[in-house]
Length: 591
Image (tube, rainbow, N blue to C red; front, side, top):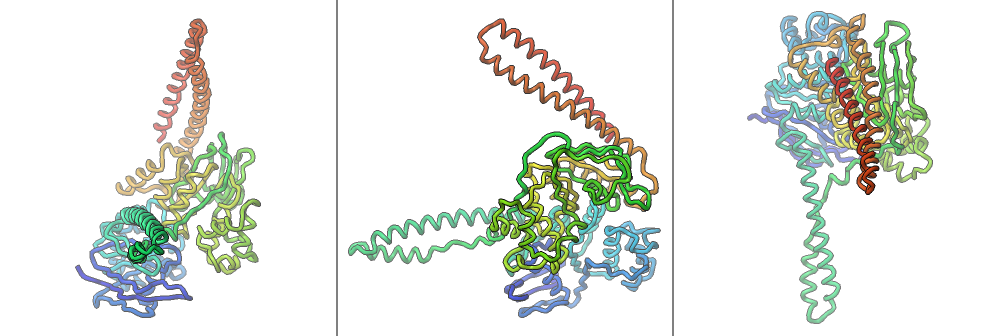
C-alpha cells in the first residue's frame, strides 16, 4: 500500500469560519473513498487544497513524487463547436486510436464521438470528461458530484465502471446509493475535523447513530450522578461530621463531564405543509400531448389518473421529457392537445429551476419566507424552517439578488414547506442539499398528507419516498406497473445486458406506438381496478357492520337473516376480488 497524498495538522479558515482545524488525512492507492459533509463544511475547499489550487494557513499537504491526480470538473472544459474526439485529443495529446479505445469503455462511439459536444446530454458529456481523465493515466481520481444531472442508466454504467477501475478515488457526493455502490471507505468533514471510516456510507451513518445513542445514554447517567452528588453536598457541607465527605463528593462532581454530541447540534428537521388527507383523483390527463410549439411533440396520447395522497415518482432517461411533463401539468408550458384536470380545490406548490430563478430579488431571505408562510406561523417557526435549509444568522439578512443558484433553490424549497400546498411538484429537490438534509426531506415527505409528484436522480431518495411510478419513455408517459424497486431492477438489467433504449441514442422522430398503446391499456385497466377497489371497500364496511350486529344478536330468526345477508356480501366481495386479480394480470401482461 502506497500513500499518495497526506494532510498533517491542516488549518484553513475563511471569513472567521474554521474549515480545517488541525485536520489529518491519508489517502492510499488501495481505497475508493466517499467524501461527505454538510453544505458549507469545506468540502470544495479541501478539494482545491488537494489539487494545489488553494494553500493551507498552516500544516502540511504531502504529495507522493509519482502522484498523478485526475479531477472531474463540474464546469464544461469544451471549446465551442468541438466534437468529443477533438476534445479528447486536444486535452490528452493522445492519438485518435487511443482516444477511441478509452472512449469505448464509456460506450462513446461513432456519431457521439463526431457530433458537437454541446449536442450531447449532460450524462454523455460527463462520460467524455471521464474518458479524458483516464487518458492522462492518473493514479488518484477526485470526482466532485459525478452523478449531478446523470440519469439512472448512466449512473449505473458509471458505478460499474468505477467498481472495476483499479485506481484510488475520492468521490464527493450526496447520493448515498452511488457512494455505497462505489466506495469502501467513508470520509467526513465536520466542524473542521476529518474522520476516515473503514466501511461504506450506510455502515458509517449507522455507526454514527449508534455512537450518538451511546453518548446520550452516557450523558443521562452522568447528569443523574451529578444531581445525586449535588444533593449530598448541599445537605452535608455545613455539618461538622459530614463536611469532609461533602468535600470529597465535590471533587468527584468536578471530575464528571458529559461528552459533546456534535451530531445533535446539526440535526435537520423539515416540516411539511399541514393539509387534510383526501381521496379520489388528484390529476387526470386525457389524450394529452406535450412539447413545444415549434417542433414535434415530446410525448402524446398520455392517459393518466393519479390519486390523492400518492407520492408519484416521474422516471425516465434524460431528454425524454420528465421536466416538460411537470411544466405542462403546472401550467408553465401550454399543452399541445388533450386535457388536464386537477381535483377540486387543490393548491399546488412548485419547486423547479424555472421557479427559483424568478424569486423576488428585492426581498431578503427572512422577508421572503415570512411572506410565503401561513399567517399563523411565528417568526421562530420561520427561522427554524430556514435553518433546516442552511439559512441561519447573517444568511437570513441576505438579499435574494446576491444568493447563488443553489441558495435560491434551497430558499424556494423552504418557502414551499412553509405554505399550505396540498400538491407538491418537486423537480430534483435533492440537488444542492447534503446527505443529512436529503434524508430529512425524505422523512418529511413520507409524513405529508397531500400529494407529491417529483423527479430525482437520487435512488435512495426515490426508494424511500415513492409509492407510485410514472415512466416517461419513447414519446409516452404511462403508469409503470410496478414499484420503484421493480423499475430500478429493470434498468439495471438492461445496462448489464448491454441493451439500450431509444433514449440512449439520438431521439427517434416518431413515437413508439406499442408503448403508447400500452399506456392507454394501463390507464383504462388501472381506472377500472380503482372502481373495483372502491366497491370492495364499501362492501367490506357493510360486512364489518353486520358482523358487529351479528355478535350482539339474540333473536335466532333475525340472526339467520343476517347470516344470509353476510353470505351474499362475502360472495359479491369474492367475485370483485377475482375481477381485481384478472385486471392485475392484464397489467402484468402489459409490463
